[in-house]
Amino acid sequence: MRKTSKRLADGREIIYYDIVASAPRGAEDRRDIGPVAVSSELRYDPLMGMWVMYASHRQDRMYLPAAQDCPLCPSTEERLTEVPERDYEVVVFENRFPALASPLPGTGAAGPAHRAPGTALLSTPGAGLLVAAPGAGRCEVVCYTADHDAAFYQLKPERIDLVLDALTDRTCELGAGGGVEQVFCFENRGREIGVTQPHPHGQIYAYPFITPVTERVLKTAEAHRRRYGRNLFDDVLAAERAGGSRLVLATGHWTAFVPHAARWPYELHCYPNQRVPDLASLPPAARAELPEVLHDLFGRFAQLFDKPAPYISGWHQAPVRAGREDFALHLELFTLRRANDKLKFLAGSESGMGAFANDIVPEAAAARLRELAV
Image (cartoon, rainbow, N blue to C red; front, side):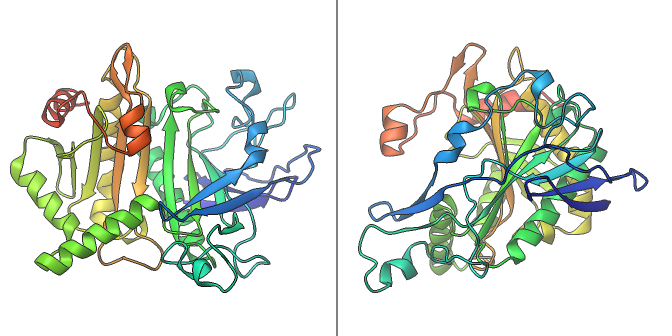
């Protein structure tokens, strides 16, 4: 893999990842664009014990442009885009409309508390109950291919491998920076999910706090370890493999299953058989097998309905500093489509109280996904 870092016309970083080392990456951004104007802020919810991000500038981002106006396609002589090159393999760049954008601690602005969200700020004299902080962090866009009409499941394993190289590299680099507490690599796919750009791409968020989901899981894992002396993720994986009724795919190094208490109509979790905290920690054999595993799983999702399912996928990684012995790297992939013509909406119980009700039993979802082997 070759990595080439450059700057866009407004100063944002853009990074090219290439398998073909001879591919030139010398194109400059010729757009006449001003600096990024952002207004990111964090506010702490004292009842829920969590940070909420505010970014009013995101109201102005482009929404579902036509293919000929796509800002993620390569540039041409007639039209300049976010990617100055006329072609690319995988490219990562700073989002022009980021949810988190203020300087991270150590670069000119203080961010929110580390490790336990809110603890340090709430204990600061004079901070009061209603705490706010700069939206310190970084948001990046990851373009999987220059082909506007492609999808992740259509990528060859060699390209998926390069995408994983990029995600791993960015996880390491962002995590090494001051003020970042967690790195989340994810993809939103489909209009039903709320995607604003149909070009095949994912995103990376470098948070200055531990996210609420991870914080809750870490507390549960710690309680499990204190009570039983074992790792919760190890025990969940062992239970799913032993039961077998929700298994979808099992290889020498990976296990994919519909979780026992799946919240979404079709939901897959994919674990390495050997627990590690993040992508960078994967053993070579597990890492080598992963592109084929992902090609298989995303291909199954694409066949669930009359047209490819809208989905959210995300790599859940351990925080940069906290809980790395308890947390386990895993992929979560789910769709809110429950039938060809029906979506699962998060209405009163789910949105209002966080209490999910699922229309599809996990064992039935797993049986359906097993049928769809690529």
